[in-house]
Length: 178
Image 1 (cartoon, helix red, strand yellow):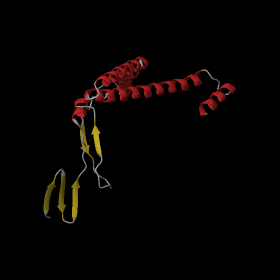
Image 2: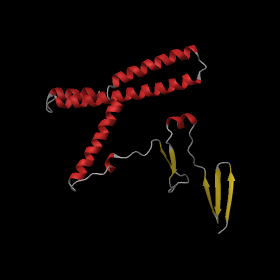
Image 3: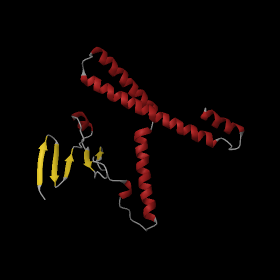
Image 4: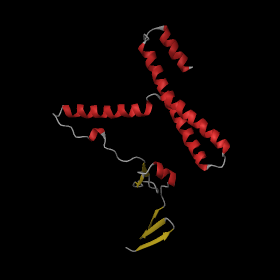
């Protein structure tokens, strides 16, 4: 077997007999991305039947998962305790991400408005333009989350006070479909 390795920029080719191996897949990040997500990593997975390797980009650090925490007790108690750990982590995540979303939307909208006023005074500030882009994306994400929460509440409200065989229930279903 003869190995001939040639490097052309970021592309590397290895010739092994009649087969050419090329590595042209890459993940890119700019300095602002790396400042916001310093623990970002990229892992190149096997290509399978394709001629490109899928890239698994991990944005957050591998945090200790609630399920993996050590639990002492009987074999029947361990799954219960692990599920309780997962529930507590999910409740904490819900509290941090979705609690008091209306006030978070108002604060974000106010910050966006203030940023846009500052942009009108200094239209060449790239920092303000970046800040506006981030605030706008955050605002849209919060509004979408609020919409999802309201949709879920509407579905729960319909089920909780309706008799499944009543005319009112079927009228609500018809209205929702419309």
